[in-house]
Amino acid sequence: MAEECRARECIALLRGLRAVRQFRPEPVPDAVVRDILMVARWSGSANNRQPWEIVVVRDRQTLQALASAEGYAGHLAGAALGMVLVMNGERPEMETFDEGRLSERIMLAAAAYGVGSCIGWFSGAGREQVKGILGIPGERLVRTAISLGYPDEEAQRARPRPAQARKPLAQIVSYERYGQRTASSP
Ligand SMILES: Cc1cc2nc3c(=O)[nH]c(=O)nc-3n(C[C@H](O)[C@H](O)[C@H](O)COP(=O)(O)O)c2cc1C
Image (cartoon, rainbow, N blue to C red; front, side):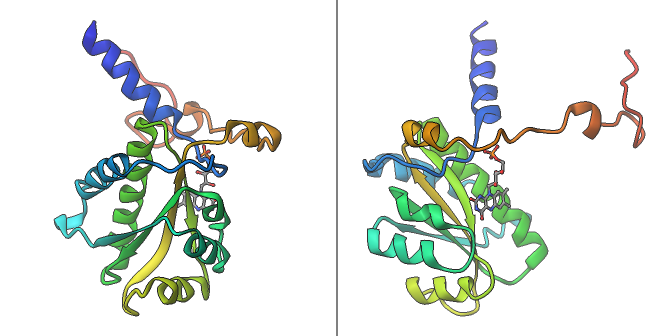
């Protein structure tokens, strides 16, 4: 029974993860940030290469500058902190996958503490701008930042986004053969 409760709690956390783009001003404690980083550190990666580094940014001016870089990371401006993912830039296919895993773990670890988060992608010249702002060596790949902070529920209610519906299982799952939508019971 205790195990079932634990599973339900974990599943609720996993299933409930949503992008949060509006944050309250209070800081996220260092101990929480450290726990999130420890989870990030243990993310799996192709060949266990761990092709990442993370720049933690709390400075308001730097967050504003990052938010203004070309791309879709404007929500960094109001975040308590941002984590900028710095990838080695050596094996694009593997590293793209690794970066996704790393991002999701950061977001889930944050959610476990009630900290909201959202991915923001830099595009075009934005990637070089971010390297310049943070002093990141030119050969690295910088595509993703994650905004973090306690969700501002009121601001979210005031500016509701359309529900981000999901495709039904019946549309995305096949059994035994592609396109066979029903499972045969054992
Ligand atoms: C690879 C990836 C890139 C994303 N890039 C951005 C982004 O640049 N800016 C942003 O505000 N949200 C970004 N998101 C968040 C998605 O828009 C969001 O996850 C999606 O709309 C579903 O909403 P939900 O996570 O709240 O359910 C990104 C998500 C993923 C997985």
